[in-house]
Each structure stands twice: as C-alpha cells, then as structure tokens.
Image (spheres, rainbow, N blue to C red):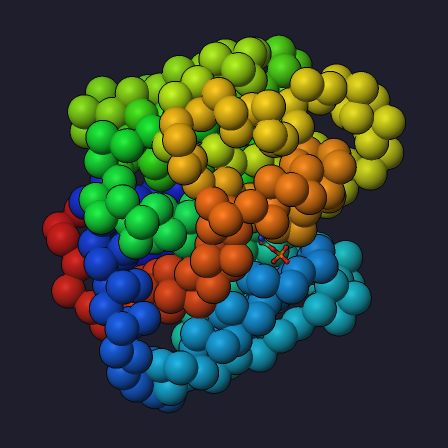
Length: 308
Ligand code: CP
Ligand code: NVA
C-alpha cells in the first residue's frame, strides 16, 4: 500500500526517530539515493522555505523537482482533485502538496498511487515539525526528557509540533488563548504519545506557565495564510503571547528560541528574541532540507525503516 505523510500522527514514534537519524546521516554525508526520482511540488499557497528546501534537498540526493504554483493547476477548480492526482502519478514518483483544507490533501492522497507529503495545510505541518525536532536533536543529543514550550496559536505548526515532540519523549507545554486550541484529536494524540514515551503534555492559557523553566521556546504567526480577514481580532486575542525578553527570562537559562518563519517582528516575537544568541530559528529553516529528503526516501521505500 502507498504510504503518505499527511498528518504528523501518520508516523509512529519509532519512525520519527528513524527519520531524524536518517536526516542527520544525509546531512553529514549526502549520497545520490534519489537519482532518477522526480518530486512534484503542488502548492496552493505561497512558500519560501518549503519549496526551496524540497528542491535543494532533492538535488543534493540526485533527484529532480517540478514546482507547480497556485495559479497554474487550479486544484479542484480547473480540474478535479482526483484527476490531477492520477495524472501527476503518471509523471513523477512523489508529490508534496500545500493546500488550504486538510481534506483537500486527504482527497488528493486517496486518488494517488504515489506517496503524498503534506507540505502544509491549514491543520498540519509535519515536515516543519520533523525539521524542528531534528534541530533539537542536534542541540540536546536526544530530545527525550527535555522541555519545549509553544506559545501562540493552536495552528498547523503547533499541532504537528506537539504530537512530534511528545512522540520523541519531550515534556511539551502549549499555551494558547482559550478559543485558539488545536483540535481535540491533536490534544489527545499528544497526551497519548507523551504517556507512551515518558514525556508529558501540558495545555494552558497562561504563557508564563508554559515558558517557566522551559529549555526551548517556540512561536509562530498569529495570522496564518488564509486567516487575513481575522487579523484585527487575532491581534487583540493574542495580547500577552509575544515571545519577548520577559518570557525568555522565565525560561531555563540559555533556552533556545524557535520560530518556523515567516516571522512578524513586534507581533508574535520581538526582534531581540529573533536575533538573540540562543535563537536556532535559521537552523530550523536549514534542517527542512534534511528532514524532508529523509521523508522522501522513507516514503519511496529507499531506506530500511522500523516495522510500523
Ligand atoms: N516555514 C515554512 O513552511 O515556510 P514557507 O511557508 O516559506 O514554506
Ligand atoms: N502557521 C503559518 C505557517 C507558515 C509556514 C501559516 O499557515 O501561514
């Protein structure tokens, strides 16, 4: 059966650990494992990191990419999703899709007999979370037993992050305003995985509680792509959630500062926090390259993965 990566929970904790080790190995010593393989990038939203990191990563490992911009395909408008999926499967070996609704990516995958990777939907951003954990893996050695606080919106980035970090045995804290929590399924998944791996998961509406003693602080935009009309209300609702010096002072000494980018300095994070010596934000961006080629090699069955 064709394996897809649509949701972080599609991967077992063992597979996530394996992907991080594979990514590290590729980063240390890239080899032409993806020679002759073609990846299509089918995007309904803009992108800098995801697009470029997939393209560069494929190139490093000998593969090729094809970028299809939002206006080019008209997924579900010019042409039915199920037709696009079946056509592209005749041309390439694997597809990375960036869509609005998760249901669009899911429908696409239902009709695709080649692997589909979620390159960000409104609900999930699994590649980002793997790159983030790879970055923490580099800093901590094993992330297991270390603490991570996400302060901000219960969006695609934090949903994938909490499940991935809990799967890898981290002590995860998530602070969101009441009305901005991730879906219940995500919260339950994060809790269940933390229980299994010896990590923990705390949900709070108090940024100070989440940040207290944390070894890494993470935030993302308050206004994700597609939410522009809610911008004004969101800026009001997220007052007090800015990742700033005050919050950093509550965290563990030397706590890492994280952001998936693009950032809005002066909103969810201060310029000083972004530029601080403990910022690992640009390592996160770099590690997208290696996390994603590991995912591609894994879904194409080119690396020996643990039994799922
Ligand atoms: N972090 C991230 O996914 O960035 P892009 O939207 O630029 O791809
Ligand atoms: N939450 C953000 C992430 C961008 C990479 C968004 O969806 O716009």
